Image (cartoon, rainbow, N blue to C red; front, side):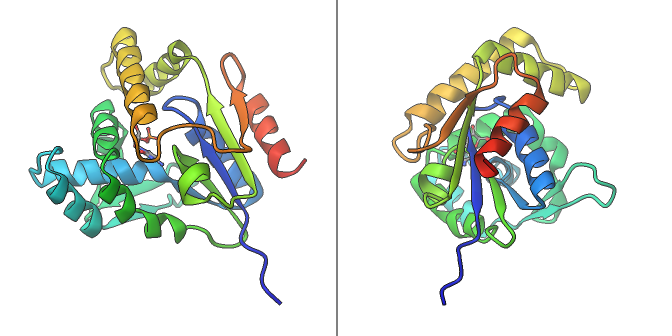
Length: 225
Ligand code: DC
């Protein structure tokens, strides 16, 4: 008898829509694994930068994506997961807006996206996977039984990022963040390969003004109706 495929909940959406927070909470409650696919693109951008590679050099960035060693290290005390890039703990560097912009820039390269496919598929292990990104439901796990697309106004997303970054002691301005978010949305949504858009059948949730618990409840209703 064929085994039932491991269930996947895909949570796609633009930066600041709450995907990371919501994915983590839902994955913990379900006892499922989690894939933060944005961290992979951030790691490639970071590794390329660290190696002095020009991000517009498609061949060099592709080689970097094919060879980079990315390891997720869950914390022992329930805190945040650390990301090791070629053996270096790059957790803090990967969080910055610079890393986000670099990730968005290299994410338009089809061969870079291709280099990360198997790595992402390998996260699908029992009892289930929550996959957070831009193309989880459209490209990487098109057969996922549960698909969600989270969104929120650019102003609200900028406010959330502002608070997150301020809390981490980073120096940013709200207006600057909103501009960066809008530029990144535009690039992520307009690229020809795997653009940011809701997958067919995805439940779209606009989280503007919604408390986290309410969003979690809505996402949960998709998996356990
Ligand atoms: O989710 P994030 O902000 O960490 O993602 C950073 C960038 O990586 C995002 O602007 C576009 C890219 N990305 C992507 O192209 N596909 C994904 N599945 C995840 C992220």
